[in-house]
Image (cartoon, rainbow, N blue to C red; front, side, top):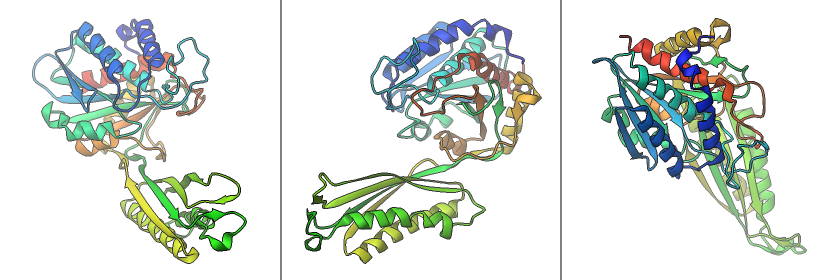
Length: 386
């Protein structure tokens, strides 16, 4: 495994940074302390420019090499999740209801490690653009940073990102050309009837049977409306209504998520969710409203950039730990917006089999941080060769 020796020297510092970030998680766009910590480290490293306040708390830093050359973006997300931690680690979250359960503390640390090395050595031409992004988990901070013009403003030509992988052997780098993560949409259905006493349903228009029927009928979208050869998930994940066992409620609400890759399939699901909900409501004699929200598009890797990233992965972790035909996953990523704006690639860095992302016992494996930092640094040095 060809970890850059100088980055290996940073291992203890990187562990300290990561655990500090883990203890102080922040949500969505409210990454003020995290951004301040990043900026403080970048100033210590002596990067050439630091730009703050992009997408409210996003940070972009520039490191210039030896003369003119390519401009490459490297992205790390910074936000945490609204959940309580159960790791029991000494560095566990100090903020109730917030934790780094998706490894963004590790992503930020790996990019900081690469930044320190690149600013110190500068064995490359052109410019490395370091993108520290908020709100990956919620509002699409990646979309916001693109919409605020970072690609044109900083002249970014290609863009790359890593994500920790608790399903992969420690030190593996896995990717694939083309779609790698799904598009994600949400739906919210409100069924309205006439409430009343639970003992006298004939005097009411009960929305509950209709809501349950909608939930069941939505499953036919995958089994009966979709091409079985195309990946699709339709999941009802929330249902709420009622306040007591003897009260028929006025309203019942259902919400859920849709994951897909094919644009036509995505259109079909949106149409069928509405048709099913309204059709069931009509058959039960109640009313309903449907709010279908399109969120992140599919994360689609560009072929030549993915091949280049795989070449770098081979150099850093070896061919036996480099996977280039990873089956697409049904999770979603707002790095998709950056890949829609510029060619690039998204890869998973194995941290060893353990609790999955978004699990309260998840924790980033500090032992792989130097691998991720070495990957970023080698990518810049190779693409921007002196």
